Image (cartoon, rainbow over all chains, first blue to last red; front, side, top):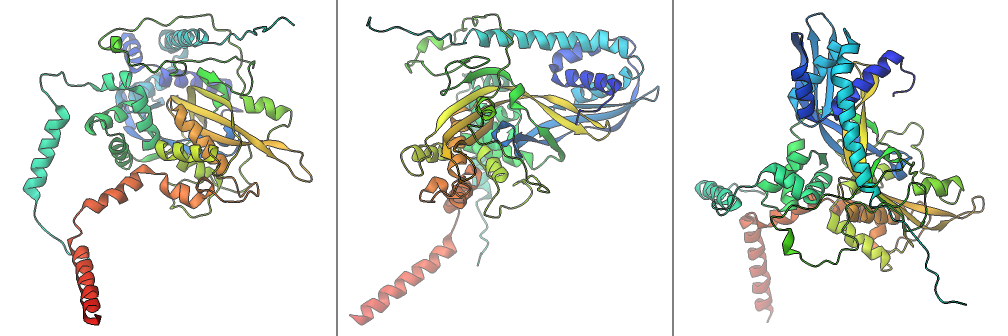
Length: 151
Length: 356
């Protein structure tokens, strides 16, 4: 659960959330442009497997198993010793590994990683969300009442 | 008894090669790419993901291409593929209340917080074939400033006033059932029914839902709300000690509000049926919610008089991969079984002739 985690964990979670949500191409471009990529060693994976996605009866009730989703994950150790973990929906092993390396690197220099990778990707995601929300908003029904008859 | 029959290897190999040829079709026509299927046959992809019970749009597109557009065959391929992958675990339950809404309508309230958003719907189209879409680019959508208003679930609005039964919690000490791990053992709890319905055949559930409307297990339903959009999938990472988002999946949720139930101690409340499906699959989510409510008959002390209320009947026949497997196995060689039947009928006729 995400309750009761420290500020540092919360920032790490935010970064991992953004990296997982980011389109693979945009993430790869950001990572490509990032200077001083550390060498890394694979601890686990990258590998693809399944996560059973759960819903709740009625939306807020008892959990049930909705169906599975493909998920890729990787764990790496960078040369300076930090261990990073990457998880994302789909079968893109390169993306999972890049996330893991970025997660490890972020433990050395969070400010740089956030400024050059996380924040721009977050903005990109948010721009996409805004566009979709605006398209949806244009289909909002404005009801009006017609008065019929005059007595 | 089974007797192995050999032969036909060359015929099978050639048949599969012929299948590959027919799948490709006229070589003068460009071959389909997966991204074309994902982008332009999105609802077929969604159905394949939902009933294949595996969220992966590109894999579903591949299955559709390989199955020549036969969706049940494609669903079969997806189900077979999932058995090749390890299971990392179970997600946290998704929160449909926090959905990035792409469509949201209610048939019970005209005005509701967050508004009614039609989204990309077939509703109100004239169902006239339109040759002008062929090879044409569509116009860009109209945009309007989004108000960023919260859109609480309609059932939560009714729930605040106590007019509808609550969602219901998992009983103390109960584990969430998983039909991909344990064989079904009737009677089922609602969690297993919902899992089976979520991956059940749309046509079968549609027909059953329809039957309840026509009087075979009537439930007096109203669509409290349908919402479609993306939700985060959170997964607890043991190495980190907290949950992170794996990304988003698109789902369709239907809240069916049905007629009342009360008791000596509880005043009458609306009852509920629930539908939740991967992708944009409104008809399926609606059918699922109707059938979910019908299958709760016993819980509400209703007489079980109709097929849609019969849990074992519905859930045992809702899976189209199982159904097609058993129906289609009939075309495989049954030469020995049939010889036995032939012997039997000949003997019966001989006995009858002997009597006359």
